[in-house]
Length: 156
Image (tube, rainbow, N blue to C red; front, side):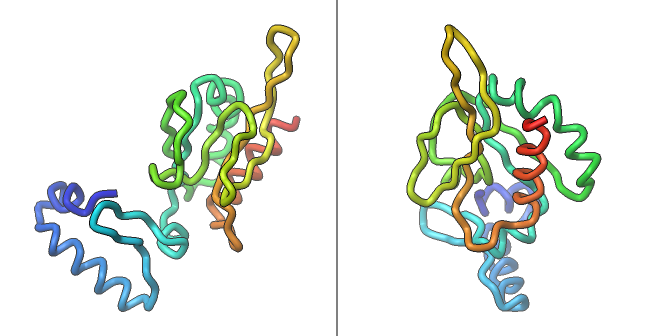
């Protein structure tokens, strides 16, 4: 997230964007963004207002576990949008602005949850793919819908 980029796209100054965000937060009486001099990210409250699930997945996991079911998910949840970023780099999904990651293996940070989504057999070995998402006391509905749908679809 970048207020300067948003300002340029809207044709206003970054200060105008910042003031508008601050006014909206004051009106709602909730902080929507975590802001530092180097980054901007949504708070849990801000994330709950956003109806987009941002997914970071490896190419293989997407082709095997997401692509076969994404149209059914979108038909079942028409108000939830899904953005999918494909790469094979294992990184910090939260700092990169993603809600969920899908990777092979179960390497997870302390503040993350890993749920097995599916597996693939190769060379006589069984490797599992996992959904990774931040541990939250209350998971946003959009994320709960995506996680539950994909777990159920891949269990069949």
